[in-house]
Image: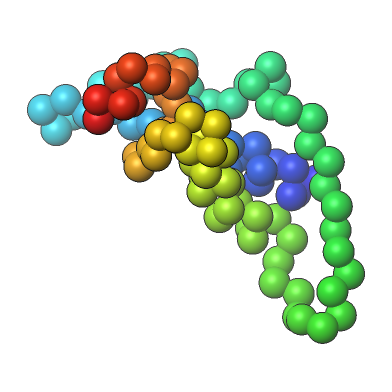
Length: 102
């Protein structure tokens, strides 16, 4: 279950979560204004654990969180040909016309 929670956390950071600043001040300081993943945002997640006896255990949940943003970024690039280089990757949806300009 910890792996699923951290996958959701990784998707949140990759796709939604953002602190916004203006003139050095946070403009979204309240949790009600801070976008995090909701149940409707999440795909069905199936975790498959491999019993690798040839390498030592490296953690159960913390390890997969590091690969989420690069995987999502590569999927967006593969689908659109556009390389997004800042997170969240798609805060308000991917606007192809604006992304091609930047």
